[in-house]
Image (cartoon, rainbow, N blue to C red):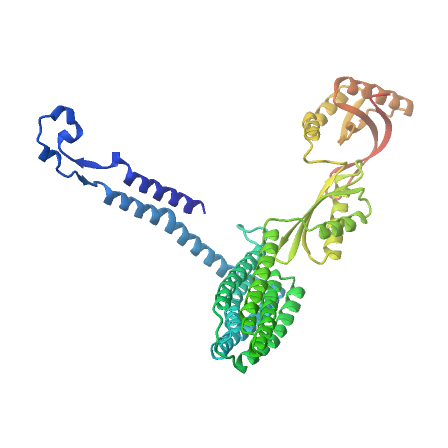
Length: 502
């Protein structure tokens, strides 16, 4: 699109340059450019025609040609080759389940294409020989179904390609693109049918209609309704938007044949204007169906929220043990399935591994209970968090990173002569401020009262020196063991816990 706009701007500038007087070299007498300096000149010479010679037009056209070749055609060719290469590369990378689904969808689409081809020919002959404008319009509708079948086959093949570097979320949106194209075809066909039927209404035919048009309408109704039910059943089972859209395309053809049948029957009974009126009703049905399919595809392409899915995901996530709240639930449709992002609130004092375990439980529950969800991304919060609130953003930015807080705490603790080692420091960012858990080892074998005195002294010193720390909890490492990796493991006993207000 960007290349096309640049090309149009370049051509417009080139056309404007051709019409600028400065770009034209005028081969005229000197008096024509300065008449006051040559007043005595004869009137005959004054009446000589001005000759204008366009110099530089050929180089300009050559520049346009080079621009079109290098900036327009070459990118199109390169992108086409890359697209074909990716299609060929991923052709053998589909799973057996995806391949089976794609084959089933392609099979029903090929069957529909064959039926549409036979029906379009039969309806056209029946409309011509039966002198029915409604049946001729219906034949054009069936012929347009062939184009939609081709788009369906292409969209199904593209949508079943696995994710790659260029499309990390997969290629499911190609189904929405195909549905949008089918909707556009239906809407255009409806407008075309309306124009032809209106013309037939203004100039009704006096030729009597034949029974062949009536039988063609009956055959179309039966075949298209069967094809609609088969395609819709498969589309709902595979969660394929493009198959559902194509199924409704078949249903619109069946409905148009019903209206055509009514119009043909009325015309055969002497109501000549009923046939073109029925053709206009058919056109309205087809255009409305195309508009509906196109709007649904646009809603998916623009990531419109599915409120029913959001409600279902929220209910499932809220039932998981350990989840204190669920918010920021977002869903996006990707070719019949949904990708879900959500944020959960957990206890602010649990470990990161426990929070991750709860998030995995939420992800697994949503994937299991929500059939249309194919991917879930869970964000963990320790409290209410509004991404659009600037006050919360400033609050987050005013705190130091955990590494700096931990370094300062260790440095202050190790300055005490009674403390020989600080095995663990953990920083918590809570709604009321920063809280620190520090565990230390003391030299010798101090008594409990001595340990409490040391803990109280270092706590006060930490609160006095680190103004952004709101609360401190001091723990004492009692024993040391080694795990399977050979690293030491400290078992802590809480000694002192207090906040800045104590």
